[in-house]
Length: 86
Image 1 (spheres, rainbow, N blue to C red):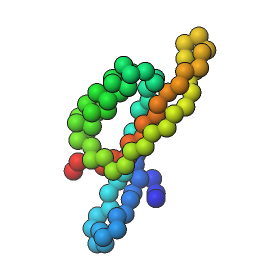
Image 2: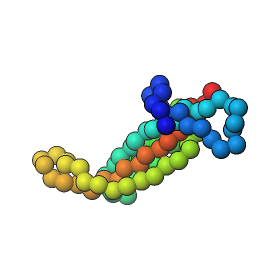
Image 3: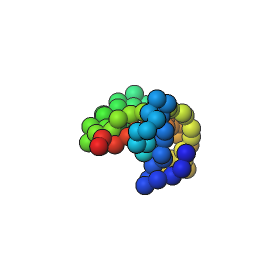
Image 4: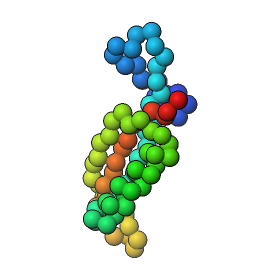
């Protein structure tokens, strides 16, 4: 895939002769508490509606970020690959 205008060009099987789509990536992260994850759900849904994003793929992972005072906190990372509505 080659970078293009902040995203990636992605050909699709069965789309021969059609214009290729640009795939964008948005990353969200949150602490791993029920309240923080509830807020993350709201934030992602609002973002998707505002951007009129057609979600192509999503994945999640966990990691540790340094919080206030240097303490390490577990975090959820959510990557969303999407196309913008034409």
